[in-house]
Length: 496
Image (cartoon, rainbow, N blue to C red; front, side, top):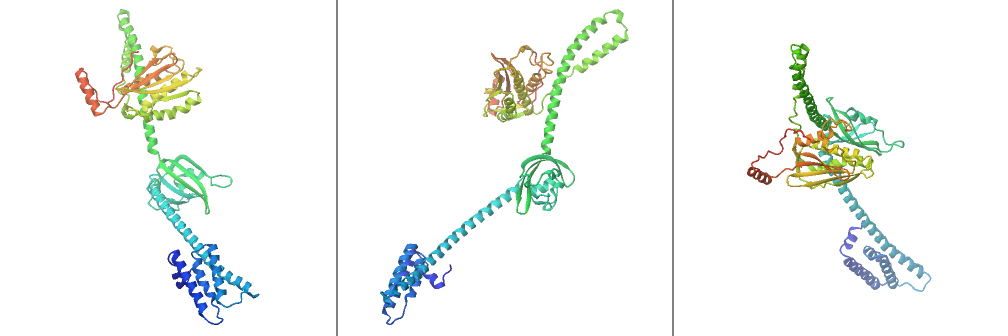
């Protein structure tokens, strides 16, 4: 309620000041009513001090003030207190004063509540505007393409990254169909009674404005609004990841192929040596002198020896400083679910505070996976199935031990040899694993256990400059040379 300017002036200030004004006004009205001679009623003037007290007092105090004003009205207006009309008149006067005070009280209270509600709304609006601004900045600055679209695929909003991803000019995506760029989204149903809201991810092919095709990872959700169904999505171009993954797979295939060819060449060379020895012995027989077939056989042996002379010179060109702790965590993520399915208990004591080592990440992961799968196969018939992975840091590097409770190794001397007759496959797993390890100055060795077996992967740690100087001084004093860490070393074939 908005008061007139004059009364608004009297209601300003503190509670004591307003009450003082109301008391002075009440006293002035009572004194004037007492001094005026004649039957001139001035009791209605008490409505003004009641207006003042109603703005600062509570309900029962307002009622007490109304009673005082009613008594003063009866006292100075020369009415008969004992007539039949006195009681209704007093009730009416008291009710008038009380209603005026309560009216002002409720009006002031409602005004305070409205002001408080208005302040809350303004705070909420400011917070919402700030959140909207932060969300807009986050979406606009996101490197991933973010957009919203209607149920039929019409784009409503799109950030700058979406325009770059789809190869269109800035600000031109709004109103266009997203199905022209991501056709797979046409199969996403709109949320209704039959289909609930979707919150999922998918991988599909996308098309740029120029017709270029790319691999897209999409995280999207559908939702309902008053204007209809909507689709919100975030898209990332993963073509580069696909290329890198395929290149890594190709490098791994080539590396394994070179090792395999070297192993085959070694076996062929041994056979060729025996054949060449037999051919030399037969050449002493004069009966075979000048025999064209015998000479052709000698030529074939020489050609086969040249083919078998191929050696593996380099098995890895991706050797670099590696965070061993993060790689072991990735290994645990990869193998833990598989071991659990085969009822193998995994005891992990590798830790995360491990030093940097020299290795090829993909090759080392292949070694770890091969050892884990070998242990898993060895424990299939065991009553107790437990695989323990531990890491030990020492002066020269880190040793990772894979200890299982399987059937053990029957012929340890035949380990790390290719094409073993007793192997479950070709017998190349451990052979390739040791070759990978030696390609970046590591080692893979076997240790027998009372129950089961242990394979130890040894890696060279990345030394600091201070450690390198100390190692160089030590090697110089001992008459040995120190090679530079990180350089690829030729594979040395095991003699076992």
